[in-house]
Length: 197
Image 1 (cartoon, rainbow, N blue to C red):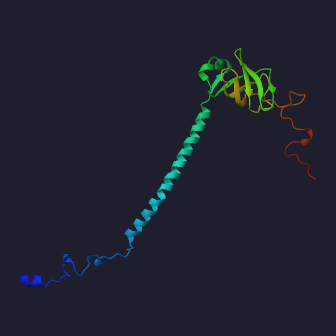
Image 2 (image 1 turned 30 degrees about the vertical axis):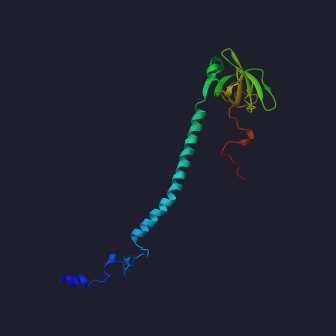
């Protein structure tokens, strides 16, 4: 009987028999739609956007780093009095720093530059400045802070920024009467005194 059952098989039932039936015909190749497929599509879309997000994040980090570097760089300019700067001339080399001293009586404003000298503790430093001098406050006898560097091989200072120090004493111009303080003109009247018609 087993022989009969085996003999009743046809070539269509035997995939290895080489005839008639194709097993690939049983595969359903139509696209499937469902929750899992939608999730995969969303994941593929996120993966496509991911490089743009990383690039944007990298640019933001680089920008913040650059801004921080520039702030720290300007905040870390060394500050020396004129006499200290001359003593450390060889150590300072071509580096930028701030130098402080009192403006002397030799100010000469030229075409785009101002030359003068500053002094501190008996040491004088010649200055060549490409910065615009603050007109009202910049004068001989006033302490200044200059930003720049020493000129190659000399103690001449090349300044590109001038900061003028000023005193903390402020006086109002009261004309000839130094005892007048916050005077109100006589014709102004007192607050609240209004003549009714």
